[in-house]
Image (spheres, helix red, strand yellow):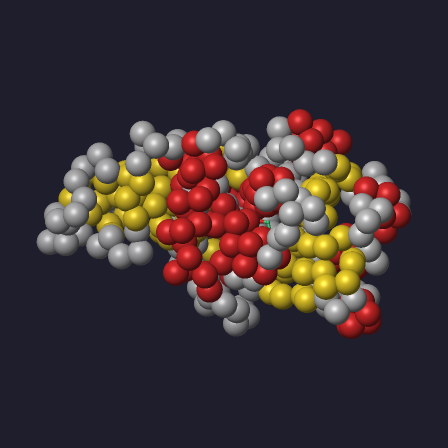
Length: 331
Ligand SMILES: NC(=O)c1ccc[n+]([C@@H]2O[C@H](COP(=O)([O-])OP(=O)(O)OC[C@H]3O[C@@H](n4cnc5c(N)ncnc54)[C@H](OP(=O)(O)O)[C@@H]3O)[C@@H](O)[C@H]2O)c1
């Protein structure tokens, strides 16, 4: 079996040499209450970059020379666990290993007849929950309002925009290529899209797309894109700070404009969002996401990379925007 360890704490942008692959004997025995799992799909996510730094955050950092872990869907291949049998699929936080022993703690059973297995890492997993709970709990959307979403063609952003449309908002997405901007409008139903890589004046572009001003900003990227949104916010705007991928690889503190005058002038709310703080709302949120999926009101995109050996590169590719929708590795 294969395992991927964190070899170095990346300096700036991660490289494949920051990871180490090791081969070892597969576990031959399981104890009472345990299962042997075989990895089927691995989620790679921008937040993993923060856990590669030796800094305190909402979860502890990865340890050097220990396996990385992330959201994984795995198949039960042998079981001495009362609740699970061979052939079942489970999802949860697991190590980047092709096989591993688990006692089932923190894992949930997923049903491949209801949705493709990879969807439990995206729209029916952490990123879908983030989109729904971030937008509804902090954004508190009201019909007719204007929502701007950055990182709009990614896993979280593409779902945020669609939920915005379901809830009766005008939705403007910001993404990194013309192809992604087309996807926002053609597949996900956004009203407007802006390619930040070909737009010199983002403040003016947002003003043009939202002449009535911005009531809700769902921020996945931080940096200059988010600064430009601030110039366009309305009175009582809500700014949901979900992520800041544009600065995750910075080695120095980024230079940013001062947000306070914008917030004071507009009586605006800016709040950091961490999905794990809303775990008691997961069942209700998943019920709603599943219902919208079944009704055809929600859809999703995935970029599926094949092969355990490609997990580190798939992770690094997030920082080059190589994914549309959720980036997942199929083993
Ligand atoms: N707070 C929470 O609980 C929580 C939970 C899940 C995710 N998040 C955060 O939400 C954000 C989106 O996560 P995700 O899983 O949905 O990832 P994602 O959006 O599917 O993938 C990352 C995307 O970020 C964009 N990007 C990369 N570098 C950029 C830059 N310098 N400036 C602007 N955009 C850049 C790329 O798209 P382009 O081609 O458009 O540049 C890329 O496709 C991340 O910041 C993540 O950390 C937070």
